[in-house]
Amino acid sequence: MAGATLSKVSTRFTLQDGVYEQLQQALMWGQFEPSQAITISSLASEFGTSHMPVREALRRLAAEKALEIGSNGSARVPAVSRENLDDICLARLSLEGTATEEAAKQATVEQINTAEALSKEHARLGDAGDVLGMLRKNQEFHFAVYEMSGSKVLHQLILMLWLRFGPYMRLLSDHVEREIQNGKTDDFERIHRQIITALREGDAKRARAMMREDIQTTRDLIRTLLTPAGSVMRG
Image 1 (cartoon, rainbow, N blue to C red):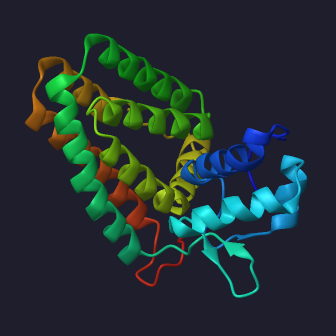
Image 2 (image 1 turned 30 degrees about the horizontal axis):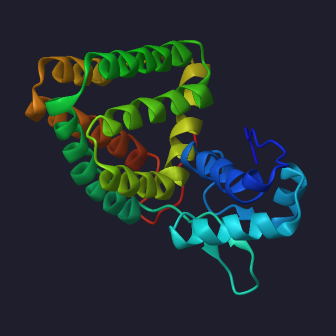
C-alpha cells in the first residue's frame, strides 16, 4: 500500500476500533489504489494483530460501501468511473453545502480560527510538495467546517461519502504529485480563504456556494483524469 502509515495496535480498544479507524483514514486519504486487492493476512501483519479485528474492520467498511467483499472473503477497493464520481459528488454538493451553510450561522471565532490554521497548513504542505500531508489537512479543514454545523447526522453522512470518494483522492494525489514534479504549482488555499471569509461574515449563502465550488472544481479535475469508460489516463 503506497504511502501507508499503518501502525501496530495492541489494546483491547484498538484491536476492534483502532484497525477500523486507521483503515478508514487511509481510504479517505487515498492511500489505496482503485481496484486494489486487500488481504486480511497482510493487514494483520502490518497491524500486529490476529485476523479477527482486521476481518471485522473490512466488514464494517464494506457495509459503508468503502470496500467490496468477494465471494472468497477477499476485499477490494472499488473501481473508479466518471458516472460514480458524478454520483458521489452530487450527494457531496448537497450535504456538504448544507453543512457549510449551517456552519456560517453558528460558528464561533475560535472554530473559524482553527479552520483557517488548517487551511494555511494545507497550503504550506502543498507548496512543500508533501501531497499526502496536504490531502490530510484538506480533509481536516473540511470536517472542521462541517463540525461547526452542529449536526452529527450530516457529519456521519459526509464521512461515508468521503470513504467512497477515497479511490478518487488517490487519482488526485497522483496527479498533483506529477504536477509538482513538473514545476507546476497552484494556489491551494484560494477557495478555502473565501470559505473562511464567508464564515467570518456569517454569509451562509456565500459559504455554501464556495464549498460547492471547491467540490465541483475537484470533481471536474478528476473527470479529466478518467476516460469515459472509467480507466485512468496517465501522463
